[in-house]
Image (tube, rainbow, N blue to C red; front, top):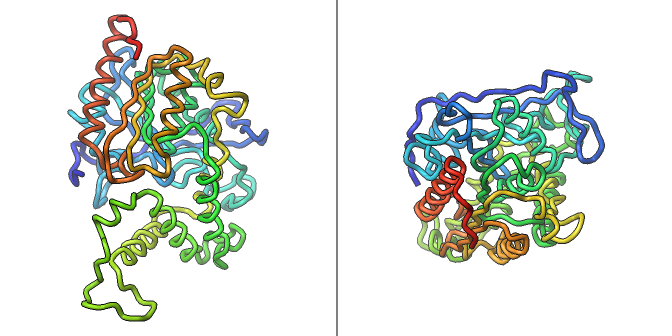
Amino acid sequence: MTTTSSFGIIETKYFTFAEPPNELTLKSGVKLGPITIAYETYGELNRDKSNAILVFHALTGDAHAAGFHQGAQKPGWWDPMVGPGKAFDTNKYCVICSNVLGGCKGSTGPASINPKTGKPYGLSFPMVTIDDMVVAQKKLIDHLGIKKLLSTSGGSMGGLQALKWATMYPEAQASVILIATNHRHTAQQIALHEVCRQAIMSDPDWQNGDYYGKSIPARGMALSRMIGHITYMSEKSMDEKFGRKLIGKERVGYDFSHDFEVESYLKYRGDNFVQRFDANTYLYITKALDYFDLSEEGDLVAAFKKAKASFLIIAFTSDWLYPAYQSKEMVKALRANDADVSYIEIQSSYGHDAFLVEVEGQSKLINHFLTRMENEEVHGHPKHRH
């Protein structure tokens, strides 16, 4: 993975729903407003604004998909994939990424100030869903004057958002790229999230979500991240990276200090997470993921009936968090609707994290797919059935 970027300093922009109604009625029925969405853009919109691609971040991501912020030590979370000559080629396309509603990186979320109280929302923030995140994103795209996106794309939680775009706003995009994702959360995925949430809520410093300006629930957050990170890797990738290597010693210490490199790595991941993410946001977004079920109003075939876009679906062989069979279920349902869908399963040992690190294989697939979509939109070529 590259450590340099094709961009200069990237600035985050902000869009606030300023015109009445300056609020959303959420899926739960609760009204929320005013709402601000943080977003970034890479590349330039063409004259008719037909070259826009909306990419979605995963659970702990943000709007900063590529390039560097002022003073940042590393580029955005998808920098190897977004930029001139990359998978999402900014010489050709304008790529947009926003922080989700409920996030903690500039968009309105539980850490934001509640205008009615002058204090952070905390647990008074209403529960949000993937649907609500997508409605907020649609308002942003309307604000930018984009009538139809060339593509929507995301991995993991980003894929869930792309699925909702395809079914809630079927005319709003020509294509959809789904990577390492699923059409609904399974019992196992919900169970893993619940353990992570309990790790945070069991920390005395969580204080029922009212920790702002006080001690943050650092121990619970770190433990939650350690649990989560294990699910992002495969057994093979962990064994290849760490094995049973010891930390600067020749023999184990026969105590509860860290003996193995993998222990130290997980602690580093946990401590790093505490410094950059909000605990309540993690609770809210994991719950939004668990609520997600594209087929909640019927079967999956029925759920895709409204979709009109072309689909590229990418899965990875070692991903046990969102295993490939779940992607195949979506392919089957799309084909039952005679949709234009291409499916590729990439051999990888990186587990769920493959969507962030398997750059070369994904880039070739995405480049080819987007070029086809661009030609079909410009020249009106008939869609190919697969």
